[in-house]
Image (cartoon, rainbow, N blue to C red; front, side, top):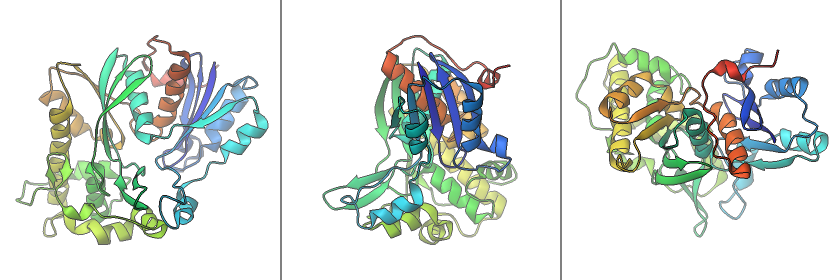
Length: 353
């Protein structure tokens, strides 16, 4: 069985799986030399060049957003114009007509599958902390209520992904608050690692807590959105997000102290999420993924706080790993195999000789 999967947004990637094994995985930016470039044309071209896809069985797409239907919110088409678009659907229909085409609707499920199937655990909790654009919709009121930002799964073979916890509706979660700080510092929301580095130079200054447990403390992060234009602004317009939510952060701290504050507060929020929702008696394996899992200081804190757990920080935690997860999820879901094929070395995902 052959599966091709793509992740389409920033940190885009393509993956080719054959009989359960990843034969190739690569980010678009590695080939184009354009950082975080969307739409992985070049990795898909490499797959076409080096592998026989005449009998490919599945093409699976994954992205951090979903298409919103006209009946769910007014001016949905405006939002979809900016967020939804997959040029590969028509390509596979025309070039590989025998191929079944689908999408992994839950972006966080793609992250979870990447971490779980890569870990080698028989079963595990998987904590996903990221800035997904998957919206919570109140269809009766034709209103968007927020986005999915934190999800905890319980996973086991062959393809069981139970949602143990999902954040309540809000527009800014743990990663979102960290990103607001990065934007305020002039670093940019996709460069949070630099904020983590700057935190080492800061001091612990008194400030209002940013979270109650793992939930943002400010009520401003909860608001109904009734049209696609406003939803587009909240989702994609950095300046507008700062205008709406920038005052969640302390205004008077020096840059390094703000970085320290947001590093400390968001780390405690993730630790609280794990402590409150992981049943250590049910399972003592924990995977951590999503873009926030790039935070190595936090990974160190998780490993030390919960030292009775077997801890696996996903080596592919950003959105590029979701093509890996989508391919694996498709294969295990169709075959119902219980064979473990953990990710041992990223070198195994290269081109054939």
